[in-house]
Image (cartoon, rainbow, N blue to C red; front, side):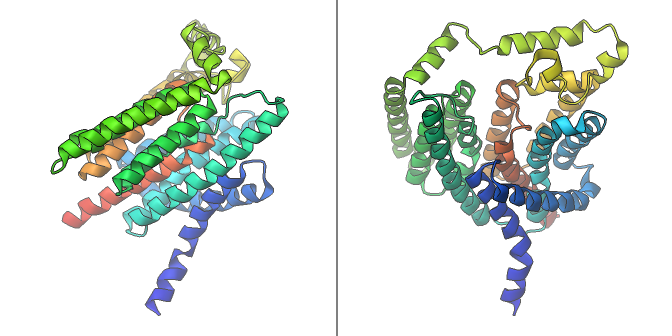
Length: 377
């Protein structure tokens, strides 16, 4: 009877995790996937209501303040035009409260997180190949970029919880293959940094009893990664052109977007605009495209106030990391923050829907460590 009761109580949790996996499997254009989003949204609203009393905590306050400010700016902006972008923000930041709430109550386990990661990886890989085939068909066989490549960067911190080291290395190499074929330069850069950090922590710094063996594994992994990168590069003309253009200073217009938004704000004569910005998603009106940079997006959206809020968000996130005592969790959260910080400069860290998984893990880890600290008191 107790087992049945536990199963029934876990149904909402498994429903939301399954909805997340199905969403990543089908993509945003599917009607079924949008139905999954409704389930996730309901769980997020319930979780925020349950967590709001903990807003004084660094980990909760950081996410909550950013969500509230974006919500206020959205309400007073062009709601119909930017509802999709706002939904992405709610999904990314909101899923944190879902996993934090469950983890802090001891109702979400590491095993469940690992299983979710494996299923998300499989679902995303399937969708990646589907999108790749559709792209090749539409472009008459010519390659292009696949934004979904960033998801494999986002999944990197989960690898810390794959206890089998050989399997973890294979997963890293597989993710590298996917990121390279996605041809997103920012994703490749962030992934390389993340992979080097993971290999150093797990196979060099953290290894004790079999340190020499682990160092050998790390060296072999780096050689394998180098060979894989070389092979994909030589067989992908589009990737070659993308990387070559980067070396030539081609940023696909990012320099224009960055410069235009920054100059617009710093030379603003209207004090109200300087202080409160130009409104939700105003980067499109200012530069013709989204900022692709969290700092500049907040500058355009919320002005000086937006920048202060975003800086406060990062200060609280970093403070929360200091309270994590478990060594493995601390390493994983450090990698999460590295990825989010780098992504905030290259691709936006909390506005892209594929980022949900990293906020799910962040919520789980901070909630679990909160539970452990309370247990010791």
